[in-house]
Amino acid sequence: MGIVAGLDSSSGFTRVVVCDADTGAVLRQGYAAHPVEPKATEVDPQAWLLSLGEAASGGLLEGVQAIGVAAQQHGMVALDRQGNPVRPALVGNDKRAQVAAADLVDALGGRHAWAEAVGSVPQSSQLVAKLRWLARTEPEAAQRTALVLQPHDWLVWQLLGRPTRRTTDRGGASGTGYWSARTGAYRPDLVELALGHQAALPEVLGPADAAGTTPEGLLISAGTGETMAAAFGLGVGVGDAVVSLGASGSVMAVHHEAAADPSGMITSFADATGMHLPVVHTLNAVRALRGTAELLGTAELAELSELALKSTPGSSGLVFLPYLEGERTPQLPHTAGTLTGLRRESMKPEHLARAAFEGMLCSLADAMDVLRGRGVEVRRVFLLGAAAELPAVQALAPAIFGAQVVVPQPADYTAIGAARQAAWALGVSQGSLSPHNPPAWQGAAAQVFEPGEDAAVGTAVRQQYTATREQIHPGAFGHGG
Image (cartoon, rainbow, N blue to C red):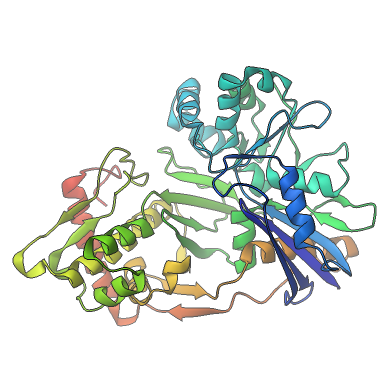
């Protein structure tokens, strides 16, 4: 069918992969850092274009027939009637809108009302909260805002030469806080609630739709957010969950319907294939390991892992609730971490090291159970992040999660997912692919770990953890487990 490209425009860099449209084999790659401060909360969107131009230089895109664009989620580009930014773009990690998010929760009548309306409760990162912040702190800029785009929408629009038609996709739209994955429709009243007036919103394209064709004849697919592109690049499907191990953690799964949760613990994203990606976040994951490593005087997490494997399941009775930054799942924003089960025989470095790994994984298993409690099936778990390579994580995770664990080889799955979307749109335009079935690219190369005979041990570790959580924070999940 030819060759296609995928762009991953993250908060700090642009990666480009060029792939065979039929097999997904990566043929060429490019990279460029964004010319911005590492922790900047706002940026001139032109920086994304400069980075893209550099990453795609040297003939990288020669022969490419279609491009897919994935970009950082929750960034906001507010434009005036002429299509010019009214201020620098706000990026996803900007937390200034926390008060605005809380205001919006109250303004609509609480968390349940938001979960029912759009499948998520406003967070500071979402566009709906950023619009409220803009209206409250920069009313002149808010008044001039006539069109609201996200980074991937804006990049697609630029690549197409800024046409009258502006587009997004279901995945991107589902992170705004004013589009419902359940109904597939915008809630303009929520935009007005946040901004103070209506604004134009991009047309939501289907997974295999094309956003348009450049003057040079290059097909541009719908594009999507980085989470959705990574899931598409990994090749996850129904029955699969993806656990991301960063300082904080997240568990998302592919599901056939929007899995909204009245408590607001689930954020109901749409994916890049027409399915749904319910996500549950935890505030604490690898930060619990790093804190324990510092306490024990071990410089590297690899040392902590080695130490943990000298202990036994259950950590000699030590239980670590890893709520070091408060917690979002369960909703305990003002709590602290807890270490219980201290006895003379358990006060050894190896037991504390193992308790940190068990606590982190049990906390993520709690998050996974929130999804399971809403009917989401989890048979296989993909583990992402550098910590997924730690032997202690690989040894403990299958039994604690009660599922097969897959650790994919490191690759830029976001850019690969964007390229796969481009191949899909290209195939549909040529009549060689169905809009209902994406190209069957080879899945991620990975290590696979089974619970095996340790399944019962994992259940016992979870029971010990759950009993402790219920004792310290009774009813944190609204029930006994």
